[in-house]
Length: 243
Image 1: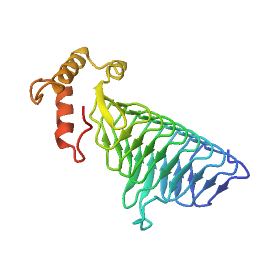
Image 2: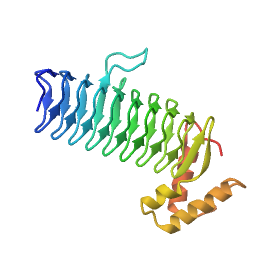
Image 3: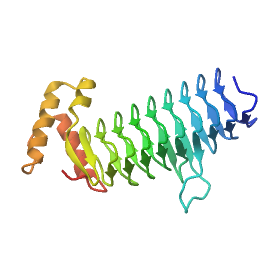
Image 4: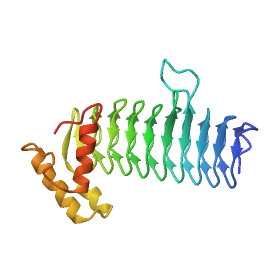
């Protein structure tokens, strides 16, 4: 159902069983997949693809012009399936590339996703999180409320960032990070166990953490999860958050 006060461009592509609320504005180059629900006063602009069964709540703005002085009217926005995007979220289109949001993510109220960010699947961004341009977040990452993430930062899989943190360097997978300036506080044991990671890998990560605080820890533990952390650490372009 499309509310009679909504402004939907006749060339926009709207899938089956899509709901568009009062006073929402849908631009020409927008695709909205079936069973997606869009609340009141939502603006969707630019070349924007939105997949199936998403919920986009009131007063969101998606696909808007990025806050980049070099922007030259290019770039797109892609949102996958079954995402829950709460009130007043803003998602800006890519500059020359794509702003990408995968599947089954939760973006809480007042989250800002800047141009060219890449968000994988099952990510949670708590109220008031601000992502600068080109930030990458791997699957199952959690960013606590009112945290700010510097441009080009990469946040690893199953990491947890505490609220009101300043993230100016990369966050390795499976870690808890918190503070201003942020520091690694330990292994995300709760997250690992909630995702049913085998206990042998959890034990190896705990051992790695103890070695990291004391000595040179490279290549001392033969475990695939530890190796993922090592690979992330040594391939980081911005450098990794300090311990």
